[in-house]
Image: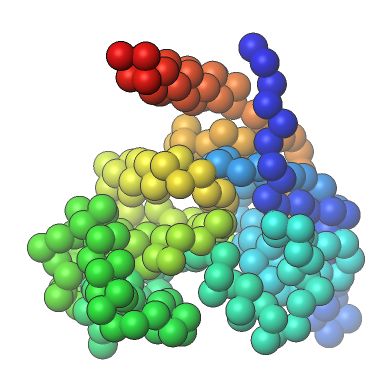
Length: 257
Ligand code: ADP
Ligand code: MG
């Protein structure tokens, strides 16, 4: 099989984070190096306290490292000031949280539209875009529902729709299925997988739940702030390539007809 060199979207280099609590020092991230490529679903897997959220927060520029850097699309997010970061995030990054983080006073469609308000998108286009995504996550009949009028799984699907609004290049998810039962969790992950693969985005999922890794192209095992191993799921890569090859063959056949 021919290997195609894929575009690096996220680069983590020599990353370290030490928290100081008075005299106490907590090494949350000791030293980490890895890359994530275009179209990849990457799972960062580790037990509670292993440093996953700290790592994700640094990747998203929410926290500054003690040492090292994170580059996204070649830009060093760990160096940006608040203003630059805010603009960068609006443009390129989506978030999914364990606790959904929806605005309780807003309806589903208003929640999904919100990121576009900050981007200055017109009211009509916001409505269009948000309803398209809510349909994609199977919530066509719940557009006017508020978070308290929806189940956990439905709320998380709103969260997913919101994270994908405006076509971000990278989606970060911190324990996105942590509050869901296993059936709903599978539905939510399949949904994310479908959107990410269709648009060749990057999805980084932080989790302690082994079952989430069946959707991953790359699994980064972490323990006590260190990477234990990086597992590349080749089988899935092969399946994806087969699909691509099939699609190309169909296109080719269509042309020659
Ligand atoms: P995980 O998400 O894998 O459960 P975290 O990244 O939340 O792990 O935490 C890793 C370690 O860093 C833990 O020991 C935690 O107590 C510590 N930690 C995280 N955030 C802070 C903080 N703001 N101040 C001090 N210690 C922290
Ligand atoms: Mg965490």
